[in-house]
Image 1 (spheres, rainbow, N blue to C red):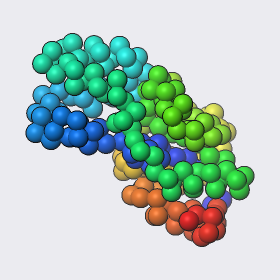
Image 2 (image 1 turned 30 degrees about the vertical axis):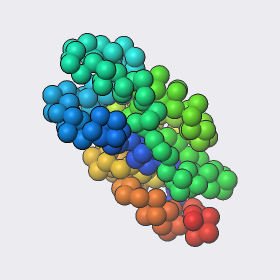
Image 3 (image 1 turned 90 degrees about the vertical axis):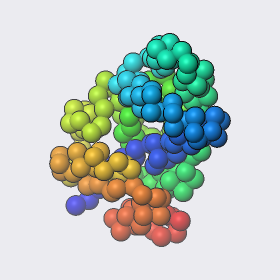
Length: 206
């Protein structure tokens, strides 16, 4: 089946997203483990991904846990250090596809304000043909509505979409709709898939 558009997740595909690593470095692994055991920081971030305001959500969460207030606020104040670094080979693949005239979309669980901020730091985020950002759409992966929104907006047949994501539940949701998909475990495997699909040559995918 031909591929008419390639769809990238962002976190852990184009940009590393490892908040625990940031906190291990800044406050130490023991204190980080204690905080994450007590505070549902990923649940907080899920609200941002669903469209809740970035600053209001995190600062509000911090007030619920005064003993962790400063550390929770770091999720906001130092956010770009949590969402770092980029994954250079993946960025090259994005740009190589675009240079070949392949439509490239982003489909990401990401908040509104922090996505806008990220685009000022990572120029390649501005290079997609279309952005499907969960916070803007008020729908998140792996739930069906966000995939339906992609299909309705781009007007392409599901079986002509090739999607990569690091989370298997997001891949499963896409394939259930008939999308082609690749479980991202590193840029080398993704590069090989793009070559096998005839979208890039080996040299273009290097």
